[in-house]
Every structure is written in structure tokens, then in C-alpha cells.
Image 1: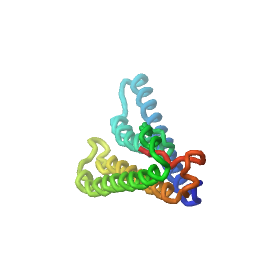
Image 2: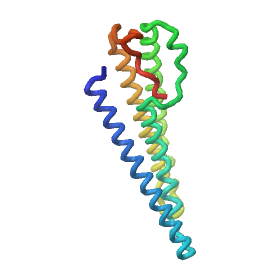
Image 3: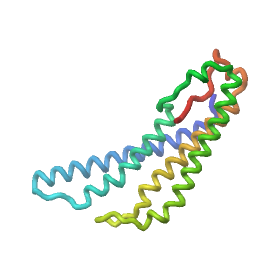
Length: 175
């Protein structure tokens, strides 16, 4: 059973990622369609039409990664965890989630520290800073860290009855 806070966190992360997915996909689609029509109709194209999809695509991918993580849609190997008792499974889940959260947090901080460096890199036509694409990695890693912390908390707060195989499992991996 999830707490209201975890449900709110999941809903917030999912909503944010869906908005980013819809916006980036729609903008990329419209720009590519408009540029294709212009090329066939006039033989010319928009100069900036290649840059915007290149800037938006990382945001689309990162939002998809976080959503897949939220829905436990990544590949996981569970046969070892299925072979151990529920108490061991719970302990391993807590420790592994905390490690995963720490690693994602470290990546978010490292990416944040790189933003100043890549901010000076500008796109050729629109002159947009390179930090735009790095910011999506930072945001994605921060969200993945938040989800891992939530999974650690859920594994910690599960009672011994909830952890029994007949009643339910420890939360599955987000990676």
C-alpha cells in the first residue's frame, strides 16, 4: 500500500514527464512536417528547423526514461531475489534503492556542475546554450533519484506481513 505522499510524488513526476513528452513530440513533429512541406513546395527550408529537434530530442528521451522507470518498464533480473526469504529481499531492496538514489543524485550534481562549462557552447543558428540539453539530463537524474528514494521508503515501510510472498512483493526495480 502506498502513502498519499508517494502517490502524489508519482503523479507529479508522471504528469511532468507526460507534458514534456507531448510538447517535445508535438513541436518536433510540426517543425519536421513544416520543413518537409517547405522543401517540396519551394525547394528551400527553414534554417533553424534542424536545431530545434536536436535540442528537444534529449528532453523527449529523458522524460521517457523517467516514465519507464516509474512504471517499472525497464529490464530487471529477479530470479536471485525470488530465491531469498522476504526479510532478506526487503533488506536488499532498501540498501540497493539507497545506493541507486545516491548514484542518480551524484550524476545530477555532476551534471549541474557542468552546466557552466557547456553554457558557453552555442547552437550555430539560434545561438541557444548547450546547457539546455544538459539540463534535461540533470532533471532526469534528479527525478530518478527521487523515485529511487521513494522505492527505498516503500521497501522500508512495508510490514513483515506485506513483505510475505502471499501478500505482495517489495517494490520492483526502476532501473
